[in-house]
Image 1 (cartoon, chains in turn cyan, green):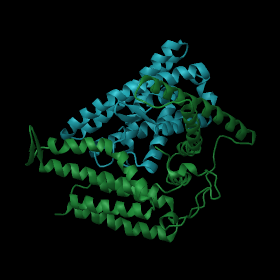
Image 2 (tube, one colour):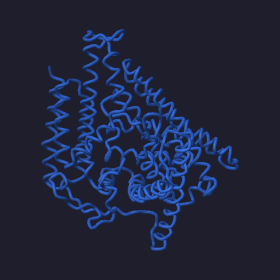
Image 3 (spheres, helix red, strand yellow):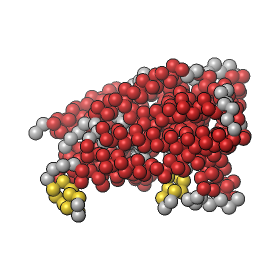
Image 4 (cartoon, one colour):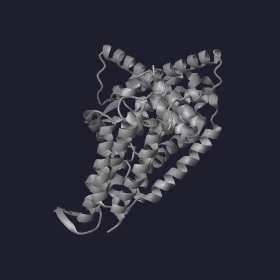
Length: 206
Length: 262
């Protein structure tokens, strides 16, 4: 659902998305050290693989987005990692499209970046309960921000898209709940099992 | 959902850079396939008439057939596209103003709305069919190399290649953990226990694969790895590739002409 297909959005929205994503990618790549690549690759692969898990949600199933978790663990590096995963999903699963790749990257990576800036500094020295909360906030925040951005992309493409945009936000609400619980669990699991992944030394971990 | 076929293939196979495979499309330069996919997508999303969009979809079906994708897995992959699409197709006929063709209680479907919905459906499926047909059957490593040759930054290509290398391991790990959970009588349901269990599953996946990545990197450094992968591929640009491009550009121009000219 986070992947908008090609042929839907208007040209100005597509161009803005592509330009903004290219800008974010350029900044993120300049900040990224070759040494940090293997760890980023593992997390990009984890994002790709985890998005294949169908999670029962009410009568239906959902797929996890995990962009909040990526932001929390990777910081700026989440942008190229998510972009790579999106390219692979587009080429091999047909999720999303070609021209719309910029918008999709922006819609998924910008929330990751927001989680990184807002929540990552809190990780250091947080207790187990606080970590659960930070993880939950990243999970819910990532999904809800992505939902909002998808809705904005649709809404800006034309008045007739507004009801669909609202429907998207509604569909995302239960997913945000599940994602909050899952991401919170992941963060507290990492704290118990491998705290060095969460502490600032993550970039040197690889 | 299962991984696509590529994930089962080791990245360093007998033909690590995916030498020419059987069918005609597999022997084309991957750069050609990327350029064609890009040009086709740009042209297709700009189409405004149903006739031109239908021709584009026809080209998509032909590309998917030429790519040799099995029909059933193709339908499955197309269905993945349709979640958001279903919402759009259901709402657009009623939200675009124009001549009414159908009334359902307070809602009125318009001719223009149905036209817009059909157009979106045709364009989206045409692009995805070409995407899967031309790029979906490439070895992922070949895709990475072609992107690098087309000027994508090397750091990004390295990240792509390393990610491709990890996906197989992570998926194996995921199945191992799932088996272990199933052996303990875990049945996924829509409840808190399931979601927390999946959280632990993903956490364990991360811990094990980061540990593994660290070990592999140490082993590579011990053998003189400097943090850079060198791109060695043996795919040359042939005359046939140029000819294909020369044939295709007028086709796309014709598609635009069909769309724009009255």
